[in-house]
Length: 352
Image (cartoon, rainbow, N blue to C red; front, side):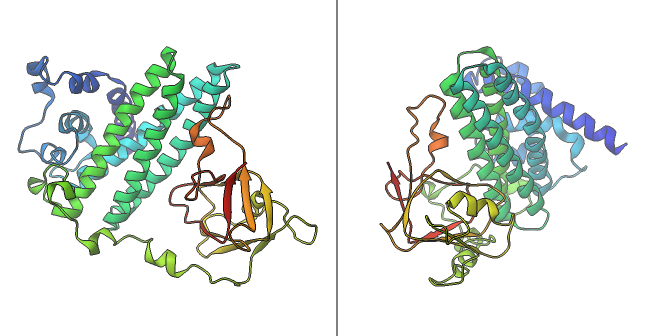
């Protein structure tokens, strides 16, 4: 019975996110209004009340009202938010399939294949974050859950933004339309988590999102109740701390490239993994994967240890995402996945 319900829910999510009705309704909110009333829940239902916290309440309500199979008889705010996150998680399967189809059909078009590959990576990261948000919510870590859900939004948006550059085939148009609806669903979930954090589980108290522009300033303690922040700063090793890996241009070091040292680092580490990068110019593109957590890069000083690269979005097959930068000059070649918790000290990043 459980597997049958799960299959029913998965099919509902795919059909739901695939229909263009919600996007069309947002573009023409007053058109055919009488036709949409049948799909809108009663103003007294928890789904209707919860969706008041979303940026697009009508879109939120049209999606979640068809996912009631996953909700208990009298759902709380946490239940509705969790249902939205679960629906977004299931939507990633179709989004990744769409990106793979674009890649398969790209042929010799390097720009389109790059956009598709980037989407596959970004959607994988987004799915990781949604899963983390789902895990954090029942544990009461609302700040963490909200942060993870917000990060997933950014990954989805970045995927769609990359596709806009190659939006000249129907397969890309359809993929972008699905991504827009997936992002709307994830955004609704994030807004619900914000309302849950502010008002509590009683959805009758929830309202539209507010910021400091509306005169709302979140409680500092609640905003900083996540698992990162101060702990990460306190764990930053001091200069001169023993290195787990050393990189240099000569043969006296085990690693001659920064990337080789990163690749050798353990995955999902709970303690800092210190990489000492000795003085020199390292002409390479360094990529820190999602799984390489708590990396620390120590150089021999600004202007002495330099990592440089030469990628540009003007190149064929290279997007802005592939030239992601770190540093005030916005021209470094160090890729850091958001929330990777990698730390850098005494290293310069330059564009050659």
